[in-house]
Length: 437
Image (cartoon, rainbow, N blue to C red; front, side, top):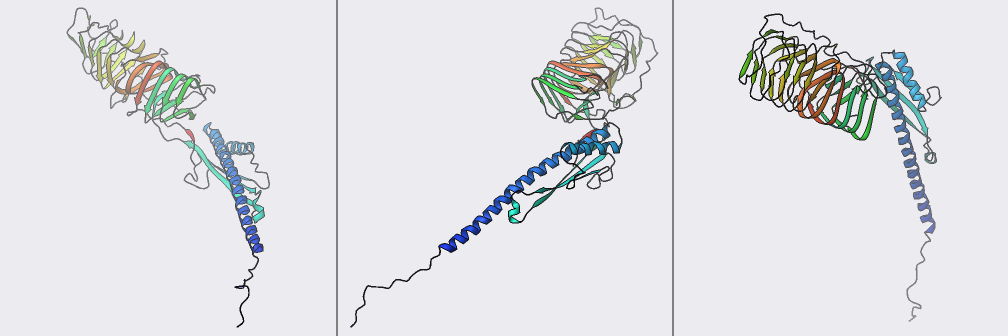
């Protein structure tokens, strides 16, 4: 027998190191290509964001010109100039800036109150050419315009020139539910102004001019935005004609703690000044002319029947801690001033029909005497407090009110807190500029 020498025979394996190297190189190329695309796509995204910001700003610039009542040609020029300032030159070979007034697409197509801006520009790739991608086509579109839909506002100032026309100073907390503030002043520095520890929470703050918010802290939930000039929403409410008859006997209010009842008519008397804590005064339903005005001080109870109260002399003062009610009443302040202060429980509601529907206090449009309101004096009732020629000054913790304040200027200061609930007030078709697409 012939024996086998050396055991089992080894099989020689093929050398695969070259194949592994090729696969590694191909994988590395794919990874580098993906990295290049990722980097370039990121750069394109940044460029797209910058382009969108430029389109938004250009559309708003055009709408701002339209808000001032100027032509669509000037609005288009303003939009194009703003795009140029942001680096998008329509004259450049690779840049397209289209300004369309009215828009040619979208929900506002054909509407001359809106400006459409479309910017297009290819962005050169940096690393992606290694995988055959040399550029990215990007574009941005924006539409801005003027919304003239009537809107609810709880505080409206009418002055077209006053700086600090809408003013909040001190430790102030204002909450307006479902409505906003509206400032007609074109003062560019501070038509809307806050100074102090101020919180303003509203549905909107629209102002024709500029705004300035300073102080140790301020929180304005919706920063002011531009609006166009608007008309006094109560300009059509007529100045009342005072009743001329019958002429009534003037009450003395001396030594009377029991009820005093007054009939409608003319009271050519000194100021009504009932005093004390137990007396009761009732005005029956109808129209009144009181030449001396009404000053309700101290405690007691006053009831105003529905009607028009034409007040001269000292005007209207409600102070102290009494109870004052009136349903369906309008106080026209022909002379004097309005002062509603103290801790009195005052609930005055406006008429729901007739020429003074919705107006509870109407101060002579030529009077410049400040309307002062504080405490609980406006915590009840509802209706517009209207002082077209004067300031409404609100101070103190008033809780909640349904009144609407319309005046030449408005000031809320001191340590004040109020919640205003909009309730059947006068809406205003003010042109408001906004970015809508």
